[in-house]
Image (cartoon, rainbow, N blue to C red):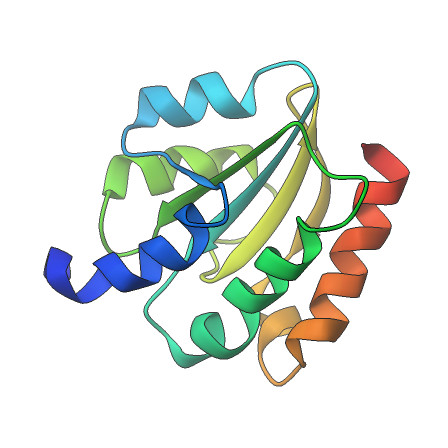
Length: 136
């Protein structure tokens, strides 16, 4: 676990743009099993989260068509919440950062860390916008 003062600015990058921070496994269960579309970001302290994942997620949700809910969990912090989110993302292996789109409780689009590393935020955002256009 990281000190909260260290991750607070990283959380705020998303929560300041409307993402709800899910802190417990129950929060995750309620959000990801709900009707409609839910976009979840598994946030992280790594460099590719800072340079690519968070900026991409923030760009994507500014699109005209977007999920009904936008949420986030933080890897290395709320272990139970992250584990529960990852259980919804199976068969994909645990990955942070990562992003997933759910529709009516079912995983419909996944971006793993290897899709984030080395790719510009704009390219990742365009991928997400395509998924939002298709499923939202």
